[in-house]
Image (tube, rainbow, N blue to C red; front, top):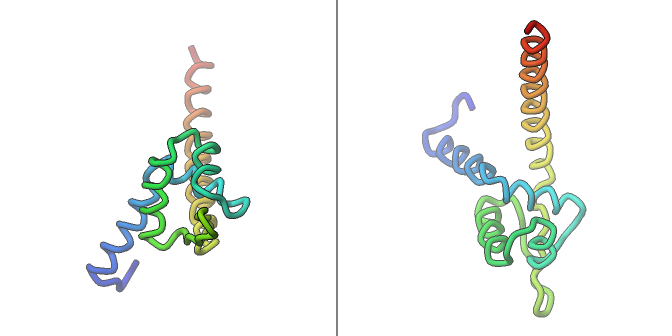
Length: 112
């Protein structure tokens, strides 16, 4: 982030903000397997189609997904697979933190 302008930092923060919603992360995870339409994503995520459409709009606004119309259907896919490297890095870090917390709690419980 060093050397980024204030405007660039705002864009970076907005990008991360788009990833701050669990439903959006679910959608991205389901798109890992390939393109899907709104109905398929709604079923996979357990959300309404309207809700999925709203989240896809946000993800598209930030360049994370692209849409392709085919007849009456619209399919979404990942715009840049690097998003998964970022998500996997963060998820791995969170998992390690949770494991460390569990180990500390386990040690404290064992002392009682």
